[in-house]
Amino acid sequence: AQSVSQHNHHVILSEAASLELGCNYSYGGTVNLFWYVQYPGQHLQLLLKYFSGDPLVKGIKGFEAEFIKSKFSFNLRKPSVQWSDTAEYFCAVNSYNTDKLIFGTGTRLQVFP
Amino acid sequence: NAGVTQTPKFQVLKTGQSMTLQCAQDMNHNSMYWYRQDPGMGLRLIYYSASEGTTDKGEVPNGYNVSRLNKREFSLRLESAAPSQTSVYFCASSEGTTGTQYFGPGTRLLVL
Image: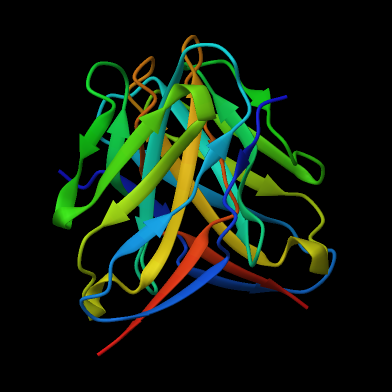
């Protein structure tokens, strides 16, 4: 069965620090990959997605993610975080021929001024 | 364009009571989903509907039933609520093969 692992459960950073959140998935076929963000008290919003093409994907609010097929990874990065980035971040994957998403357990990011 | 809407926003039930969570989308999506979100466990799929008239079980379907009333609406029913069903429930819809899902605001359910 497909699974998604997010190894960082809770990350605490100061503003302007760089961010990298890990995501690994366990499916050998063609996949679509997603990062969703959930700000406190809000619903999930799409941050970025990868379907095909350039493995470096840019999303909203300065976030980017790199798909490394050989490592089954799709890590999220941001060069300089802001207090407003405090949220929970979810990695998700679906196989090419289905629209069911498998979510990771999430990473809680806290950014202090 | 409201996207995905859910009612109610918050509900308190006693063990054994029943209730239906409502979800509607106005994006003409074929696929709709119900998830529950619990601390440290991410989102887990309860049921999904790939198209009007079809429903399938997800990862955690026990204790729930669903109805895809029409293309817009997908309801989740708890026939006999249990404290283990205390959670935040999210409905989502998707464009289909692209897999991008759009989420509603959630329903926070407390079962005493």
